[in-house]
Image (tube, rainbow, N blue to C red; front, side, top):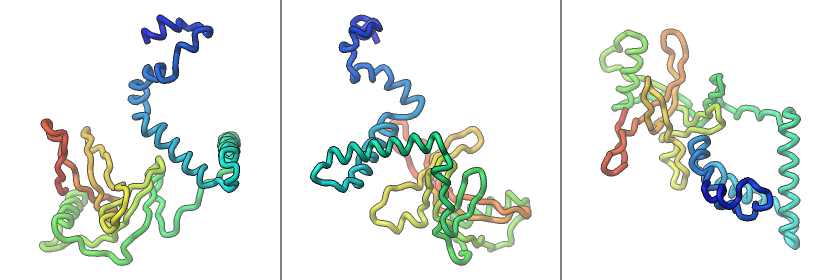
Length: 226
């Protein structure tokens, strides 16, 4: 900021002193606090756009002219979509999905039949149902649920689960979530989603394993089942 005040002074005639790389430093911290790190909001999106436009190139003898035309058409399409929203109608929900309202959508895969959940996960579900309904479960009873693999959030992101992701060899892990419980913000790993009838109402729930707080001396975290 001192550099710009000294050499630029807000004068158009001195604009050549104010390089973009220098001016961008002033916005780095405020913009990171407002909308996140620059890699998330600019670098990755730009790289994805370059990749998409590159896939569309057909005239290989003049690739750069073709790329420029593709980018120009993309800008026109984006502008039209903003001005006339009905030109880009909402996509129908995938087959077998379930709209939960408020932008939340359960997505398959899903168990064809209800499965008994045993072990610590079954105990956690049973304890939750007992507390929610106020009725103790029969001794030895374990819950039976139909697991769902994914959920679409209101912002369009899709949360996956250990149930299906753990079977894949090459993947981008998308099962970690940030949740708010009371006044605390926690980070957790989603095991699976399921639905249960509580006091006559169908509720959609997620079984999660909560990460412990970071170790102060290392900044790492442990995993706790819950």
